[in-house]
Image (cartoon, rainbow, N blue to C red):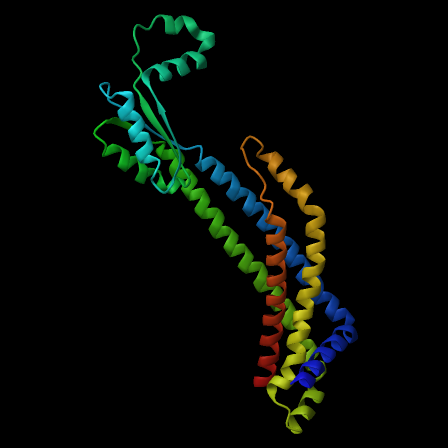
Length: 293
């Protein structure tokens, strides 16, 4: 078994070197695909972070009835804070609501001086992790006897949910498309290599070589295309990631987004798996088709 594996690896390396132009084309296609893939993944990750930041800015506000005291309002705040999708709750008494309004309209104090008493209700403000959960939280609040009205930004919620779904679907579709193109390119490269060695393959079959014995060198050759391409792209990613991510974050610097420290490692892992995967699949399919024919 070890001798078969050694033969397959040595043959794959020799073929990689012998067919330099074809190998370079396959590796170049892999590098281009993985670079575009990494760039797209970086955009998608940043977009998802922006969407999450926007989602956490969506507040559900429950306005309480006038006869509700602070103790009841704080108890409601604590109860709603236990809902799974809720990330932050805040109780605002009538006095605190008026104080905040005076601070916000400090340059229009004459308008507030015309108001007698305090017409503002106490409220419980809720922030959720996922915009799709806003309506669920709103229904829970509406069921509370102490709640008079619940304010939900319907248009903003619908827009965020659609944007998040479109970003995730578009990302998956584009990644699949780039991977498919690379599989085809590597498959064609392996097919040319198989065709160039068709007489040798026929002789090996005549002396009793199994299909897997013939197939393994080409499969490993495809894996090597992916490994070399992934290594090149990994190095480029590590060198350029900080600059590219910084430029993307500058575009949406109005949102409180923090970069993920694990992102470089995640991109390297994805690059390696995708590179080896498309190289292996492309070569396996091509050799199998040739042998079946």
